[in-house]
Amino acid sequence: MDIKQTTQIVTSSIGGYEPKTGGSTPFGKGSFSTYLNDALGEANDLQQKADQSIRQLVAGGKGDLQETLVALEKADVSFRLMMQVRNKILEAYQEILRMQV
Image (cartoon, rainbow, N blue to C red; front, top):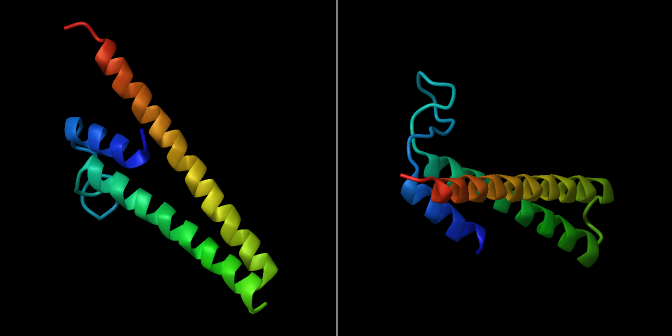
């Protein structure tokens, strides 16, 4: 099961989480699915920036090695965080399935 399928499963059954868009609560107004989509988009952007930085460094030598390594680390940390969030969501979903009604 990939992360998009996980997001679809969780967001179809859970609502009410509010992403950072302003408002009276700490996270503003919105839904849990919006927050997950924003987080996935941000992780994807960091990965694309790291890939672009690598291409620039390898292809033309125009890139800076230090900036490339920082971009790679940011992408790695973001990916690891998203994987941990996915794991926690799956654990919560499985716990809900085990509940007796």
